[in-house]
Figure 1 (tube, one colour):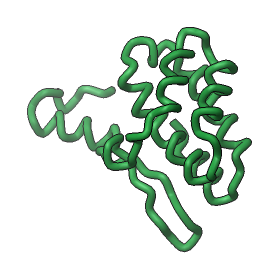
Figure 2 (cartoon, rainbow, N blue to C red):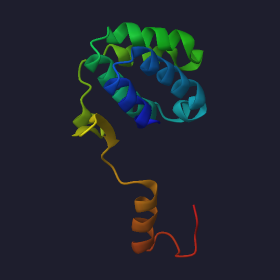
Figure 3 (cartoon, one colour):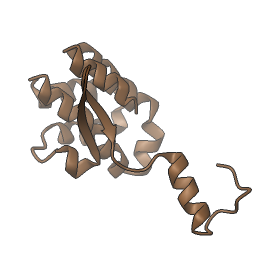
Figure 4 (tube, rainbow, N blue to C red):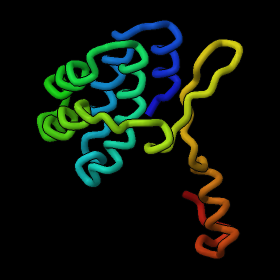
Amino acid sequence: MALECLTRALRERRPELLREELVGMLIAGEAEWLRDARDLMVSLAPYHHCAAQLQLDVPAVFDAAARAGPATLRSTVKEFGRRTDVTPEAFGFVVEWDEEGPRYRWTGPSGAETVERLRRAGILDPDDTC
């Protein structure tokens, strides 16, 4: 997911960018989201947060995205838009401030860090590439 685009939407106060990115994320990741709805919900959380920060009607934003996105994800997306417990801490992201304004960032390790940890633990061979 492009947290950079959400950062831009929040900094520039651009709801249309948030909406575009949300629908694009649903379409591009449909196969992945169907495998595990929890991954979808984690990915939706920063969009939910951004919509609230932009003082949008969050359920309406998610309803519109559900209609524009894949039908297979429609109910999950609509339900997620109505949640009231979505916080950065609960969904593994933070909103940091720098000289340019707010920035979204995942709190977990990067893919490269995860691979390196698996190698150190002996789970991956040093020659394995992912």
